[in-house]
Length: 391
Image (cartoon, rainbow, N blue to C red; front, side, top):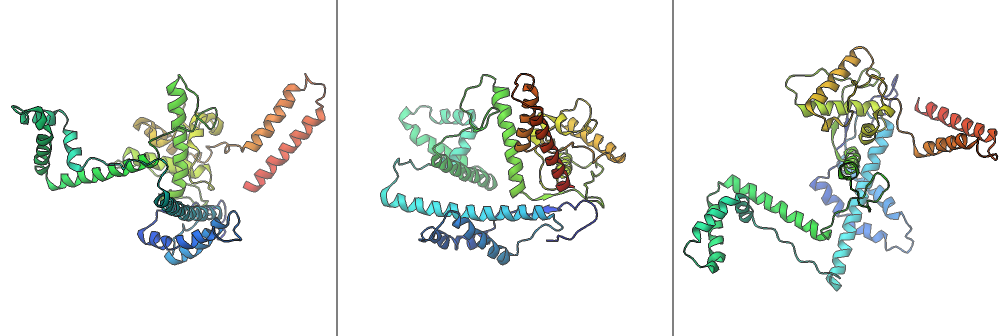
């Protein structure tokens, strides 16, 4: 990984390494699960020792498999990718340890609440159910003149007959669907067949009932899902970024007639992601779509345009934004889009405190002008330091 200095802003990474584990890597990690469990039985064990042990295995792991890294790559992106790998390997060890301990405990004493073993319908049954009314018609014809008690005999025979008439390639498709159904049932049983929404506009927990489903449930969940998807994309997704100019800034390529809507949308998303910050692989699209005027300069998007993740834009919206951005790029205005990044909670809190002092100064005799002045001076010094660090 090169950290060579270049003139102007640093170059953006060309790729983010995909860290989905291969079969050989899983085998190597499986062999380390036993020593990992022994870490927690040591008399000198301290909190965090398991993660430290996993970080050491990460060094051995990348040497063993010659893990590729983006080239060229910013130092902070390099640190981010290393941190993602460390957490992934630690989580692998932790999951295997918990699974082994849970299995051994179940064998010795049995589960407190025994769960019925899930069983999905076989491929043939899934197929005949998909026929719907057509299968019902065939079944009724086969049952003509027979007592109702014969249904347990007629139905399996009819199912076997219809399944045998399917071509082998279609049988293979239904067998794969059957396996997927079994996996889903196993997950449901393990999770107690529950699902919870844990995000809401007014807090971290979604416990109250909202009458406005569209505004209070659907949109809140969609924004949360977009943010969660962005976080996951930073960790587990191979992503080719746009070509950059000599200063390291991305360039939007001219469109081609053969490109699909999704291809245009992916290019737009990569363009805005790279312009947002070289320190992050994706921009916070949920925040940008909720309040675009807070982050976008005037003229950076078409008038009355609903700015959001290009992946969920319509074809007309994608074409409009792409053409508008190309025109600004031709005029040399394509880099002047974002005002600033989202302020940190600490800075928001500090400014809110100053505003409160200003609002209450005329109503509270205990508030001195010196208090407000000192707070303003502190914030100005903080902002100057942040600008110097990011310069």
